[in-house]
Length: 301
Image (cartoon, rainbow, N blue to C red; front, side):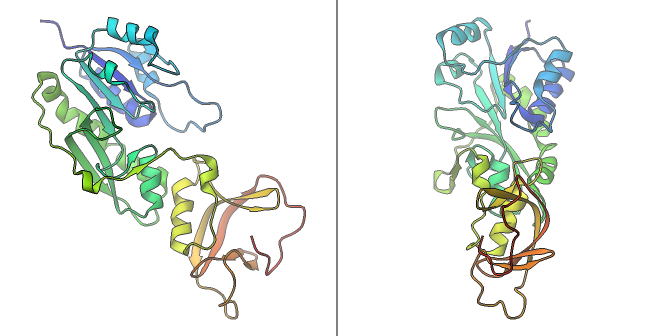
């Protein structure tokens, strides 16, 4: 009897590790749809294309999979099951309907919270103490389908997004590994998501790292750790110059600076800046270009 045909859509290191698990167990993965690495993005992770090519699995990287040509090619692959793991584009219902065993996605949050793009970065930005992954049925709306399985892990209040990602990473293959046979047999149990608890966030852009000094020190610290290296970084600007802040620490305001305005420079070495409720001491930073004038005490950023 022929093995069910799995069509895999994926990216990122979780995509790599989940695909590698399926291939190591000799499941019938007929093709991988993934993304070309973006030359403007720091690629600090393994990608599923590496795992696929090592096993001779066909790899496709279309910018859009909704064109008639690609839908025709995907139809010709005759998928029984579609799996998506960190694939960045929406997959149309026309493609989802091709797999008679269903189409399922592994999302990087504990759904129904943090639907959408960059869930780990958003969760760190909001100070969440627990992150995870959710395997769910794919439907027209993003990350809204019934849940098959999920698993979480605690993260610390000082973990960066990358450190949180490393904690979440093993959960993906674990969830896929324990559910794949049920998916292929068409007997995976599902439960609807609670829409009253759903939250949705869009993709993050480098400009979303702009620091709003009127926010609390904790809010700004969470932004810093959510987008620090290998992500684009939190930043503040002085004229046309941009200061990337890779790490900082919340501090009380020095004596005599209790009435300082948010964004006011309170100290220069090390640099300390007033926030909405205290101060932030800059620990590690770099200028994308040097400001025309030296920073001064009392200057507002």
